[in-house]
Image (cartoon, rainbow, N blue to C red; front, side):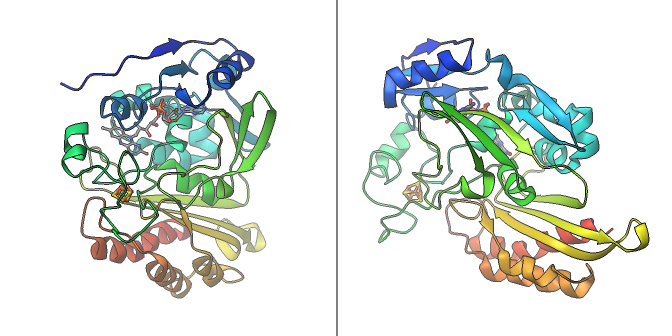
Length: 333
Ligand SMILES: Cc1cc2nc3c(=O)[nH]c(=O)nc-3n(C[C@H](O)[C@H](O)[C@H](O)COP(=O)(O)OP(=O)(O)OC[C@H]3O[C@@H](n4cnc5c(N)ncnc54)[C@H](O)[C@@H]3O)c2cc1C
Ligand code: SF4
């Protein structure tokens, strides 16, 4: 049985208290929400904070406010189950509810939060193993070692960004609010992720994710398609999030012209991949089969999955085309 290492557990009641604790404690400390990512990582000695600061008693992080008319603000500690069941999210942002529904299992969704999901550690077959297994291969660059077993000549870690909600947030243009003892800042989801499996966030360790700001829901539609081995539960090995902004001819509900588009691939690189070439195939045109095929081809051309998650990498690349087709055809329907 894998055991947790010893650590000090803190339970602040206010944001000011939480950021002060982490500011005072320094890099030895880490926030925890549901713990469904952090605690398994600690058991495997991938992450070893001496102090763990729970964010679950910060009431500001547990709220959902607003609606599709004005935009929605979701607190970072709202659980995935609450995201799936929230009536406003289901009505105005159905893509968020449906993507959240594909994450893990009902029990883990009761514990896991939207914030923890957006800050999920990157994943790799050579890293997501227990300590003895990793020691058997003399570890790797991401933790305790000095070589990357996926690309041995590389000085970069290629561990994969594996959250289902990240590509969706980038595609729809969400923003994140961060707080620390230095104050607050807002950052676009699109600029929040680094293409580096070790240093994968543009967030300092002392910054708390407070909430997620979604844009007003009118004038766009989005879809998320996920490839995984087991339909019941599994991390994505490819996720395609597509968002299109459109004009309605004569006020009818069919899309007459695409006025803006973003297609984002998840789970094939250390950061979400925004395929601007695919968007260019759609903008200024009706969403017809010819444009959809061209956008899917652009995604296929851009995808470069490596051999460090489930399934053969060439097949995952081919699936990029199929899953983009699915996402865009769903939006056209
Ligand atoms: C068996 C299994 C299957 C899974 N399947 C999926 C899947 O299919 N798709 C998927 O996307 N994920 C999956 N996950 C990963 C995980 O369960 C979810 O991503 C979950 O949403 C993580 O949320 P959490 O609250 O438990 O995160 P935690 O483990 O509490 O935290 C995750 C990270 O975020 C940091 N953190 C959390 N909240 C804050 C905050 N407010 N401010 C700053 N830092 C913070 C923590 O320090 C940690 O680094 C799976 C996990 C398991 C164990
Ligand atoms: S990509 Fe390389 S360095 Fe990164 S976790 Fe995998 S083996 Fe380690």
